[in-house]
Length: 465
Ligand code: ADP
Ligand code: ASP
Ligand code: MG
Image (tube, rainbow, N blue to C red; front, top):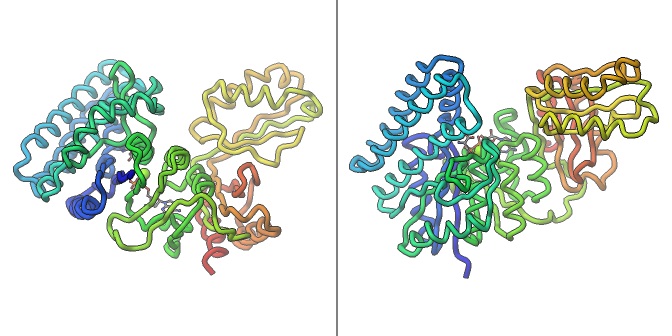
């Protein structure tokens, strides 16, 4: 029988003394019912941001911030370690050594005057490499035998620093060698999320928020029956409870719906987590570390036909809508192909293509930070058309947000779009562009950044009436 459970704990779930106590309780209970339990941990909350801020400041010529941060991180980790595992000297040594490594790396970054993606990964990886020994020590002290595992020894990735992808076959082999014996000895491996290493052994990361993805990767290689993502809210909710406190837990959500939500900004699950779980028949749950017995969400393959329901609404911020306009584009073949190729060349992913597009204008949304490179790439590509006035302008909008309404049954139900537009219209939110049906279960609206929360709350009232 496949009887392995992978549990991933996010930053807040390992972010304090109290949180790690909860983790110990949850692990203890899981061990009683499952043959093998593996734990994947994030860095303590806020740590990855701090590490990267230290690196950024060092690249700008000042490594004093990194020193301050190293002091804060020492306190943050060691104060918890002392309370939960006072005799764990190896955990303490590891944390001290990693903080020294942080100082050395930031010093090197200052001398070079730049932080390459490779250096940033080395620095960002330190958070998980500190939290895993800390959690393992706490588990051992609580009588739950555990051992910290550095995913650099297990997850083999490509060379794409900051967005690495795993080689699943190589990772499976390593997992058998490194983690197989731990399972056999009845230990819980406490594995660093977010990180891996390329074939040369150089550390890589899977992208921000990527520990969820690590959870799914380990689920696949251990042939786990279930992967439980433990976080700081009670599962996937009708919207982000930080925007709308009336949000409530969805007890089930389909893979399609959660994919759409995750892609369009619902941080509760990293979008890359979903496919491996779906393809390998692993049941995914999202649960609340701080209320383990409260409502939770199971991800399911097909909904039981809740036709017409808007199930959730989400927003992704810091976006920019680019509009390329010109009468001379009318009927000229190949403009769109050249446009999207130019954007791809600028290494930017398009988040949404709007139906406002016609042959005279094409609009699409990219992350706000990418607007300049995208506009330059387009100006370069269409230099001649601009000179001939076939293209009148390439416009980049102000900071905007994409608000996405999700529900698997929406597509086959007439009138949903109308309801959504009335809801935001009543709130006097100006809809800049829309896209519908690019996936089967979502409608996306582009709105001004400052109106995003108001739009989300207005649409949410259609769900929770
Ligand atoms: P972790 O550190 O556990 O990975 P994250 O901060 O990455 O946690 O994700 C959890 C957060 O996702 C919640 O605190 C919540 O604010 C946010 N969130 C956004 N949309 C939703 C949603 N639809 N349901 C639940 N949480 C959401
Ligand atoms: N610690 C990493 C981050 O903050 C990964 C994660 O938490 O999932 O992005
Ligand atoms: Mg997360």
